Length: 334
Image (cartoon, rainbow, N blue to C red; front, side, top):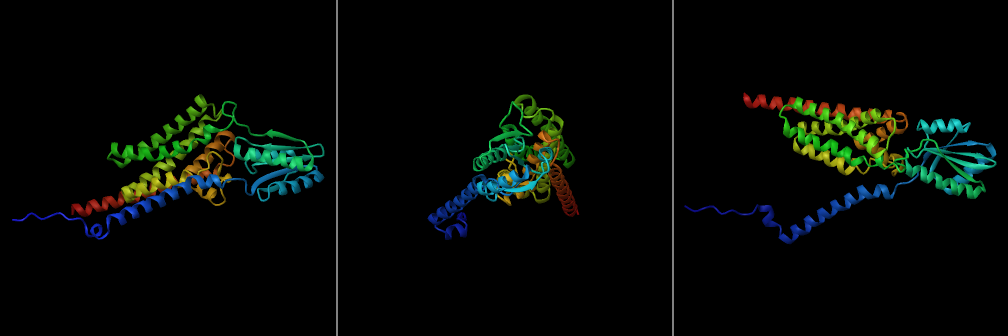
């Protein structure tokens, strides 16, 4: 009796090792290029582009400043007129504009909200300095919504991208390995989302000093963000298996993360990419946390609805996957 010999699959035998090595190297190189583009290109191409900007003050000075502004930063700002500096400040606090200029015969005052984005406030201040030089007007800076003194650069909120993605991906794996019951898995994810929101808010408030009086709003926003990541991933896993979870997790890590714009806000990212990032859970969660932390929730409704939509979609996917598994088990039993 002869023992059958083991041979390589036909596809491998037909392709020389050198060709396989070259093909795999090229594929991995393409993936590396894609990752570099996803993580670096958005930041490299970021900047002011049609940012809503308010302007108020003496009509003659306003006209002069508008002309100088377009020369100093063409296409960077979409200017909206306000009747007074107070109305302009209200609009900044409501997040309908990112900042503004108040022009008068004796000087130019730039109104910013560093809590909204230090990148935008810094860029607007630099632009105002250029406008002041062009119009021979002295420039003063007024920070309408400043960051806390303990975190003047906004690093606390700006660094939430990775904790958000971690909080959405890892618990799905952990609770699936711990519980066989779908009910307990989802209960675990909901519990962790609430606990994670409180933990993050506590660290930001009591350790980093990144927030002052908005502990519970930030905790709620962060919990909603974690749930909007975790529950859809659990739904994908239940509906499509490990493949669905892997695709979803990779999308959040390699697409949602770099396009979130949490440190600078989505408005600072290239046009289109920033909008896409705000439709994904990391970007929407970052926007909602910032609104809750510094603007009393102003401008956060869209982000809250986006996150809620992701949670609902996750539950629907989970229900579809559970029903499909039940039918499959019934067929096997019969």
